[in-house]
Length: 252
Ligand code: KIV
Ligand code: NA
Image 1: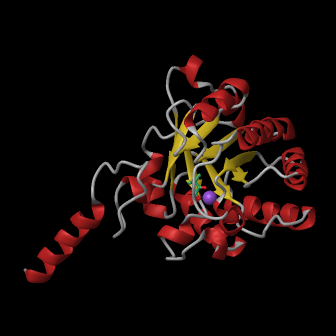
Image 2: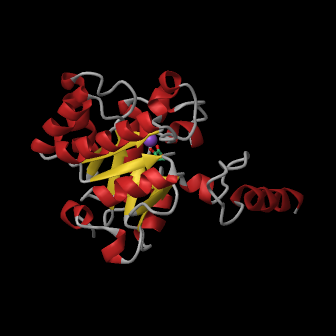
Image 3: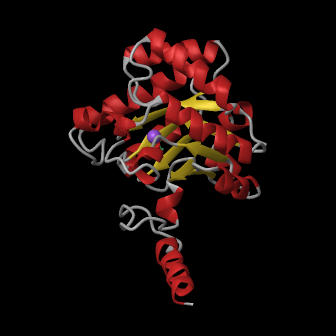
C-alpha cells in the first residue's frame, strides 16, 4: 500500500513508470480496484456528473461525498484513497477544517483533495496538513469554479496564466500538499511544473509528461451514454455491452 511518504518521493523519471489513479464511486468497483495494481483511487466530486446526473460538480455536498467515500473505502481497504472536498465546503477556514475533519474521520480515506490555490485555500491546506490530513492540490481547470472560469478549456496558453499556474503549483507544494493534480493544463507547461516540483504531478487532459495520470473510470470504460471527452480514449464500451446483455435477456 502506498503512503504519503512514498507518493511524495514518486517522480516518473526515477520510478520509470507513471503513478496511476482512477476515480471510483461504489463498493463493488472499489473491491475490483482493490485487487489491481492501481496506485490511487479518487472519490471525485465527478460523482455528481457520472453517478447523480448533475451538469456540474457544484451540486455535490459534503454528506454526499461522505456516503460515497465510505462505500469506496469499505471496498478498497488496501488502497490509498483520496476524496474531494466539494464545492463550498471549504469557503472559509472554519468550514474547511470542520468539513475536512468530518469527511476524513467518517469515511476513513487516506487524503482529501481541494481545488485552487488562492491564499485562503493555501492557509486551509496548511492547517489540514498540520492536523494530520494529507492534501492533494488541484489546479488548472477546476470544475467547482466552472462559472467563474467561464467554461471548460485548456489553461496555461498565455504567459500570464503560465506564470500564475507555476506559482500556484509551487505554493501548493510549500503549503504541504503531497501531490498536485493538473487538469487541462497545456502540455509543455505541465512538463515545466513537473520538472520544477519535488512532489509528483498527476495530470488529466494535460499531456504525457506528468508523474501520474488520473481519469474518470466511467469515461475510460465508456460506461455512459455520451461519448467521453476527447482526451480520454475509452478502452471498451460498457454502455453498449450492458445494453446488449439486457436486451438479450429481455428477448429470451
Ligand atoms: O472529480 C474528479 O473526478 C476529479 C478528477 C478528474 C481529477 O477531480
Ligand atoms: Na473533482
